[in-house]
Image (cartoon, rainbow, N blue to C red; front, side):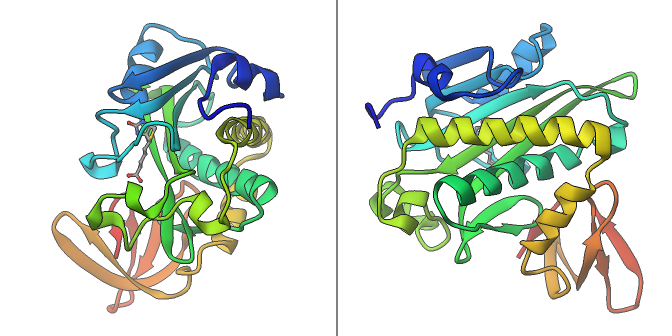
Length: 262
Ligand code: BTN
């Protein structure tokens, strides 16, 4: 680890991709990398562009929550995608991101993360990575997708706010050592690119199969919190577009697009 900050030069030194991360916008501090990426993409920024920051002051989580993005400890970044896919497949890119992070973490850090629907990555039941995928449609087609990825890398316990301490972890806490964020980042981007080109040719089955194998709640009774109510049932499967299929007590199968697994 040459120093503790992520620079554009260091990213270029380690990155082995053709498209993804070839254009980089690196910040010390920004509101939200997703917000900035959305603006760039609206003005036609090219596919694969990486937006990364050492700190976010208004990091966005799912369901309009805040994402805690401390300076210099994590990986807070967004990638612009412009896939030629049917609009109903848009949600699957979030699974692609999750699987790519898991593959890179397994290879580089030596830990096998688990998934929690819709797309949290956990170690021993504690979250270390969240994904916020924002889709922009034009005339019923995917115009662009912003894949936003937040990873707690070198946090110590004292770096988490009190309310998160029981539910959050970092890769460093789990391994007991500091992790080179730049190298981990470049390995994740490499996996995203590889998986991205693969699914465009071959479909998403390999991604959802990997995801399901690492999802301990699949096949179990779960409770989903959605629109201020809890729905209970059996987590049967994911459908071909990544929606959760929930078999409820009356025997119906409900398709769940968004919500929280509690
Ligand atoms: C979640 O689990 O709620 C998703 C969190 C996603 C956080 C990342 S950090 C980089 C990118 N920019 C943002 O504002 N959010 C995403």
